[in-house]
Image (cartoon, rainbow, N blue to C red; front, top):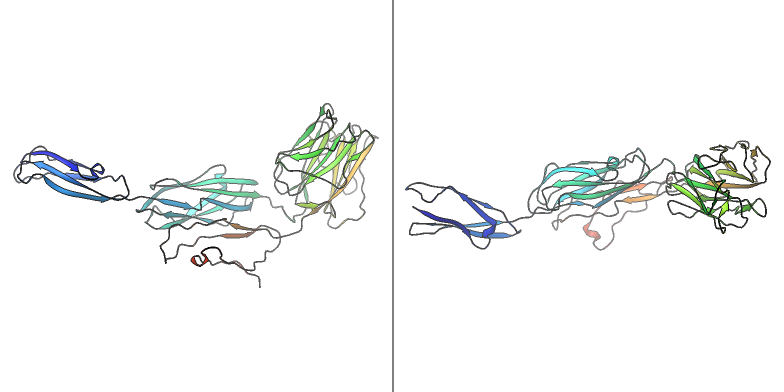
Length: 440
């Protein structure tokens, strides 16, 4: 028998192919093999026909071909996960991400990685194995262990053989210090700057602070008695002038003022802005960072007494019980308090008609500001995360795998929970169980 042609024809002939060992003729009683493969280009049923044209009277010989193209699809939800505030070097409660096979065939997971800005601050464990069946799901449990304060982020990527691989979720959290609302005050650092040479319209103190702390700035300028200077910082915050307002040593200056920023964002610099025409001479600023939040300037948990001298001083001596931090009688941008000094005292009770003094080496005109700062009262601070949960396609009448929400009290007082309820458009389609204690 001679063979003149072997071909694939029909509606979807391009998605089928063949190889064979038949040659151009086939002896009596002999056989050959034709191997057919299917490479679908669409996710649907496809057909074609294999035809062998030969020398037999019944030629061509025909075999019908059919196959169904399917899609491999997967999701990782939610697409973003916030793990909230977490104290540095401690580990959060795990929060889940759900990997779901939403396609028409098994999905093979090859690997998962953490990348981005702070991948070392996040970790994951999972029960996924190497294959997730059609309609199946598995869970990636993510924890947050910040190594530094401030905003932290990473990306979890799951690599698989589904379309759109890798499946990605963005992770975020905020590292916090042990301090915060209601924490006792403690002086963290003091940074100073004094310019005795230039006429300026602004002066900056470089200071790298932690979020949530109290920042206090004692500002002076030497040549104007009417300049209502202001204070801002690298985080764009607007500072508040204490009740003392602006004070002048004489009718021509120097002029001083004390400003504060309670529960401050993290900053890298604080700037005094002078408004006098042509700028001012001998500007100076001392910035103190204090751990523990503050809400007002009376009554007190910390007393701050600030003194300015009209000329350069040779020394400063704190009053009884008070401390002068960073007490270096220099000019310039590093530890300079040649014309200014701040002393502080942490107290445990409300102060009434409190007095203090500070001694300096040379006789000079001086100006003084005495302020008191109060730690914020203890209060609960609640967070529910993640802010949204997405459930993948679920067969009607069946129940999904549970996904977790974490209710956290990040404040300093107990949180009272009166009820936990489902609302919205379809509340009856969702259910919840919890281990949160309701108040009696």
